[in-house]
Image (cartoon, rainbow, N blue to C red; front, side, top):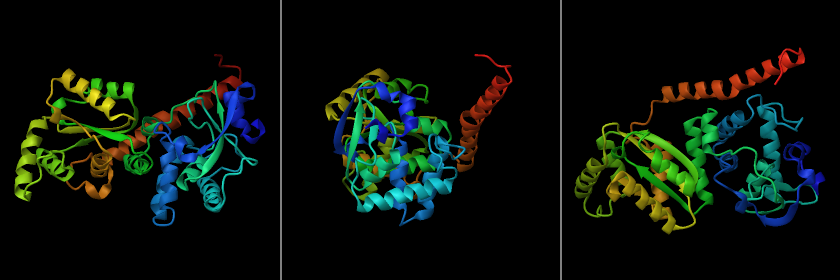
Amino acid sequence: MIGLLQQHTVDLYQLSDKRFIREKVKARSLLTVERFDLFAKLSYIKLRDSNPLLAKEIYNRHIRTFNPDLKEPGRTDKNSFEDFINAFDSLIDHFKKHDFDETVSLLPVSQDGTILDGSHRLAVLAFYDKDVTILRFLEVKQVCQFDYNYFIQRGLSRSTADQMALDALEYFDNIYVACYWSKTGNLTDREFALSLLKEKFSLLYSKNMRMSLQDLSVFMTTAHLDQSLLGTKETNSCLAQETASKCYGNNGILQFVMFQSDSLDSVLVAKDEIIKFYKLSPSVAHITNNQMQTLKISKLVLMKDSKDFSLDVNSLLDRLDEFKLIFKNVYLMKAKQVSVNFLGALGLYKK
């Protein structure tokens, strides 16, 4: 069975001498918020026919954070973006018509079910809601965590990450959104709340936005965060402005954290801990309590055509930050490694 895995993966995780269990599972059961890259691939499949330009943009940007040189380790057939696209399109066309064939390949996963290789195959099978045969290695953990933060730190654009996070919601019914209004202080002041969520839950995504008081009022009216907003448009506007004024602080920065939990009770316990720590009223630390509200807020925060009420970060500054992150965390690191390899070949560098 090991022979049906990519040799690069077998060598990387030393799988030849590891215990495993062979299982047949629903591909969607292997989707996890800690493999954020899967949602770029799912976005591509979803948009491939209806919006091919956007689909390729999302796929291209996420691939370049993984492989800036557009080469895939262990593969000789992927040396350009066109190669990646062609190979992916072939998989999509194949699995649209055929089921997974365990005599051709298998998917290796870690002890907790995180995929170790075959993310493209998994994405296509999950999109078409098909089964897949896996080898679950009982003593293996994933080498690196490819969550949303990994991609942001390596320069993935916020617009692409927003779309990926939004599309991820189609595959989970247990995502909640914690809304930290500017009244909770600056981002440093909110470290306790973010650390608490990281400790207790798996984070899908986090985003900061800047809003004026009026923008926040419009946001709250649109999202129906105040349950009393059931009257006329004028009454709702007044109530929303009153609620917004209680939540608004001088810095104007809002933070939205999307996280996964199988228990609403656990979410409510975490919310109480945050409220007590910051000595806040419940309205200042809002956390959604159902999927409908999660979708409502997520669309307002992440969809491009829903941002006319906000003062989101300037797009030029976003692009400059993106370039700096890519240069620092990808190209500069690769340049250093090339220098080390060169000096090592000359016998001038020793570990």
